[in-house]
Image 1: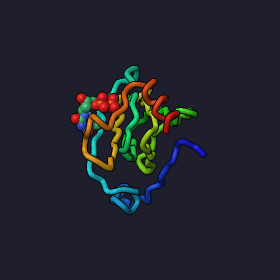
Image 2: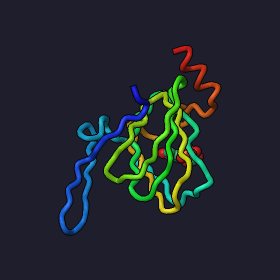
Image 3: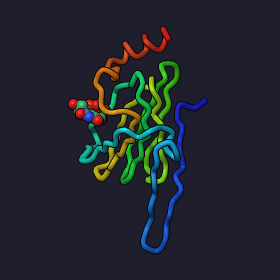
Length: 134
Ligand code: TYD
């Protein structure tokens, strides 16, 4: 099974442009408790490098692009986020890294909970150990 799980959002478009609606427990598979977004990112400056113990997330590249690496502890895959109508699910216990941001990138993330630093695993060796012991 692929680590990557994509969601295709319905586009409500007309001659005025496109509109995408995201609803918790509907086309987003959890109650949305937080939204954050990355802007002003730099092509040579990667971000992420962590996994979450419990948090479920969906990432949407609203503008521009970036390359996402996801790692289950057993397998690693990568893909480009470059569509405002596709969401990438970042499940709990998936190590993720964002690379090669375009300068115009706006990466929006919907999260199942508020920010909690104790939910982060920021050390890769600790992540692998937790996966193997699960
Ligand atoms: P960080 O997790 O390092 O960002 P990234 O994973 O994109 O590299 O977060 C940067 C800072 O912002 C860090 O001090 C934690 C803080 N932060 C919040 O306060 N709330 C949030 O919702 C997020 C995602 C981060």
